[in-house]
Amino acid sequence: MSDFPRSYRKFKDEHQDIYEAYEQLGEATACCGPLDGKTRELVKLGMSAAIGSKGSVQSHTHRALEHGISPAEIEHTIILGVTTLGFPKTMAALSWAKQALDQA
Image (cartoon, rainbow, N blue to C red; front, top):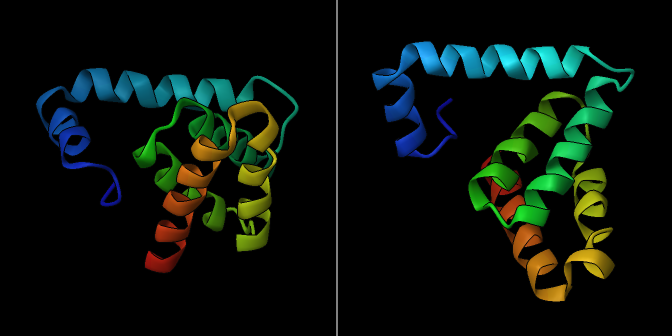
């Protein structure tokens, strides 16, 4: 949780019941289908890049590493978005991921 923005951590502290329900929803969605953990993290990383969320890209970069995903796989996942997201959005997401990788 330390890699989450301060506002997220504060929300968790102030609204523990909502945060726990959110965590349970995440666990339920992870278990409801055939995708393995590595694939789920790569998909979430791509979605994070698509919405242009720096915090989410960095969080899912850290989670990807925890699932044994290599920096090259993380970079490739983001680069795949260039034709869908556009060059500027992809480069922004790539820079956020690289910042997270440098912190790892």
